Length: 304
Image 1 (cartoon, helix red, strand yellow):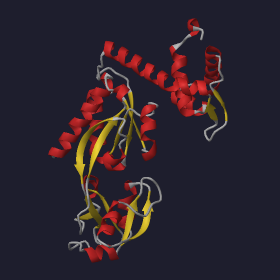
Image 2 (image 1 turned 180 degrees about the horizontal axis):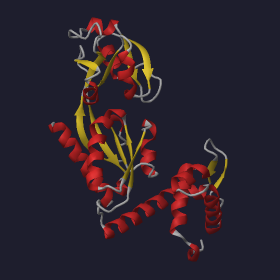
Image 3 (image 1 turned 180 degrees about the vertical axis):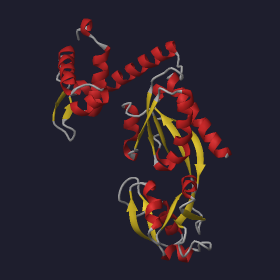
Image 4 (image 1 turned 90 degrees about the vertical axis):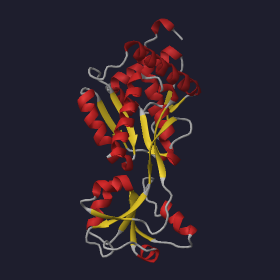
């Protein structure tokens, strides 16, 4: 390697290129034009005396063995360097222009995001927030490649390799349209199993979930007529049907002007909602500040 030609911007570009394995997508993340990034890739190949990325694979390019060996040490080095610079400079939210990327499920949006936005407007007005839809089996990869800064997800989904902190405990509630025939009385198990259900399947297209596991333990089943990819679709779909849905309580409370909330007819195990981040970013002052803002928002929500 020719150290005299080493450029930290080139290393940052290499990190993103190895994460994306696609010049166009990597250029978008780096806010560079495709020709500019292609030129940088050419410099990187000369610097490391290796092709680094070759045509092939589902995303367009495949990393060479040399590139794979570089990937994790490079990522750690860049994170440590950024943390060192940030620690020396400190973090002043009033003047910072940081962009944070959060992977957050629909269930936590309604609890955290409105209050967090109010805090950012008041305390960090030039910072920005990008919300990304989580992909359950890719959460660790998203954090490892710095595609996201924080992950807000249920405890079973949170990768063990990440640092994490509990936000709150959640439980389930049944929801239906206001004038639903069942809205005026408590739900019993026979009725619950007989009516048609709407299921939100964040992993895509599934017709079974924790409710069905619970019913199976009781020797019962239900009919899930409709599966959707997002909880946010639930209120509008219930409004024009006799379907019912079982959803997280804190999110359902934000729909109370549109739906009726009823207790499930059987005990359904709740879950912890957690905040997770990669260990290499633990000391980042800006992320530490953001984590505390999120915790303060949750405390306010729980006290309301």
